[in-house]
Every structure is written in C-alpha cells, then in structure tokens.
Length: 117
Image (cartoon, rainbow, N blue to C red; front, side):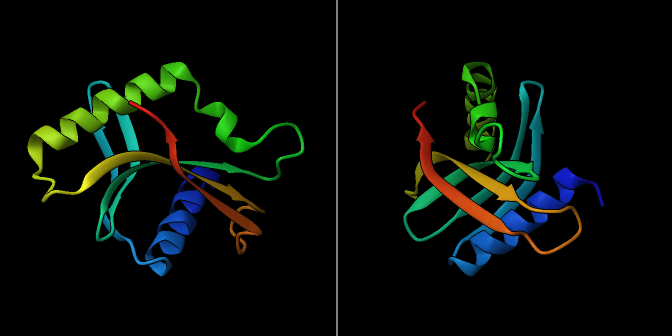
C-alpha cells in the first residue's frame, strides 16, 4: 500500500473512532479531489489528508496552500450540488498522519475548520 493510501485509511479509521461517518473517499471532479467526505451530527467535513514520516521540516498541513484550498472549495461545491446536506454545516478539515508506511500511525492530528471558503 502506498503512503498516501495508507494515510487516508488511517485518517478514515481515526475519524470513525471519533464518531464520524465516512460518506465518500477520493471524491473527484474536474477541479480536483477530496480525500474524505465525512459527517457527524452537526458537520459535513471535506477532509484533506496529508501523510508524512515526520514533521521535522514542516507540518503536513503546510502543503494545503491557497491554490490547493481553491481546488478543494470547487470540488466541495461539486459534492454539495449533487448531494443534499440535511442541514449539516460544511467545513474544511485537514488530517495529518505521521508514521512509517504500513505500520500503525504514530501520530494523527485533526485540524477542524482548517481554512475558510
């Protein structure tokens, strides 16, 4: 399993353990891809997963720059156009996964509402 897929699986398991329901994985439109779409009782979270061995050089969330944020917003608009939200508040989250590929994740950090649309 590649590092990105391993990190996304770890992030999905983490979110499920926190009470989220995973609605979609790797949702794609012509503008981009959202790694996970998850919901809880109040929020519809569009989740970008960033996987790294460590945060020695920079936190993984630093890779979610303004250009990436714009693509995520456009892709989320595609999701919202095709799926009813049932009064859930949309937000953009980042989940950082740090650890050795294939092994148990050393650290998972969930940044709720990581940026505004």
